[in-house]
Image 1 (cartoon, rainbow, N blue to C red):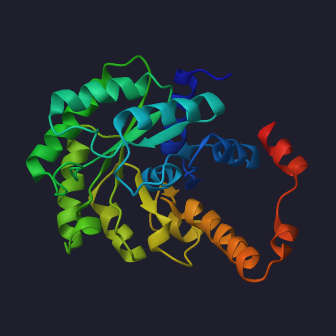
Image 2 (spheres, rainbow, N blue to C red):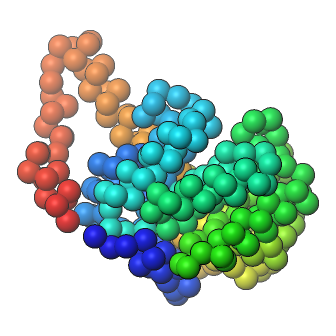
Length: 271
């Protein structure tokens, strides 16, 4: 079993490396083990995918459920896990740091803190958001391992906001001490290039907004890591729906022909 410090160092090395890497988003321990077995070097949780496993919508899970989920994912894998920690599950900075310390104890290697408030369903003020990132960065620096902090600017995802506003926020988060920057809602490669020219820290991009774009194309415009959000969860949900419709409407089981065998699953879980 690889210890937490080693996982943090591995994630840090990926962020500092020259190659753009894909960090897929499993929704539970089993899917995490499968992705590890297939050869991915790091994983990220998905808030929407995890909420789905509880029959909930994105943003509706409790802090306790999130922490249990992260602990289970960390125990099940030997590669780093970066957590979508939403807004830290707290409006006050003090409580956010307390929650962050509990997250670190689960064994994960990093997390994102976003500037959208779960409680009020509004964006944090720009200065307050930067102050929250700074507080999180100061806490992370106090640890004896390079726990990776991702700062997320949600402005383009949550509102009709120009790229310049997202850049202003990410520049502030960079100055506040984050390790990685992320602005979900970008939809064009030239937007990534523009953002890349404004900041120095590694950038995470969300592939689900860039249909048809390759990892090589993301690398060309300066993206460091490529995440998927809840897309793997929804990709798995489609054959579930189609198989169910076949059984209900046709009374057949042809969908079984495309299923993995138990041996194939066991082989991946053993890696």
